[in-house]
Image (cartoon, rainbow, N blue to C red; front, top):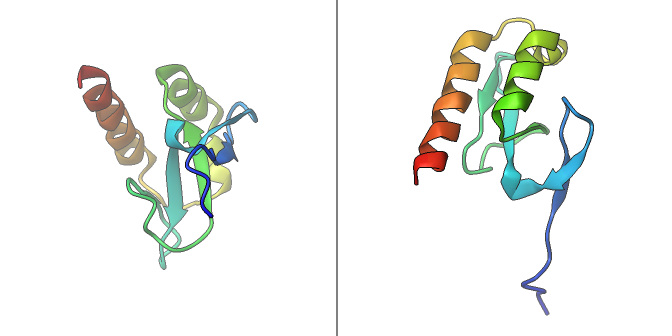
Length: 92
C-alpha cells in the first residue's frame, strides 16, 4: 500500500525552513570529507539540503554556511555547479 501523494520534506540549512525534497539541492560528504552535489539522491551518507533558488545560494555563500560541514571543499566550484543546474531547470 504505497501512497502516491506522499511528499517528503527536508530542512534547508540556510533559511532553516522546511521544503519538499524535490525543491532542494542535496549535498553529501565523500570519503575524503569534501562536499559534492548529489543530483539524483543516490549517494550514500547523510545529506544536507539547500533550497533551489538564487537568494538561498547567495545567502549560503555570504554566510559561509557550508564551511561548517566541510573544510576542504572547493566551494566556488560547488556553488557554480548548483547555479548552473538551477539555470538549466529555469530554462526547461
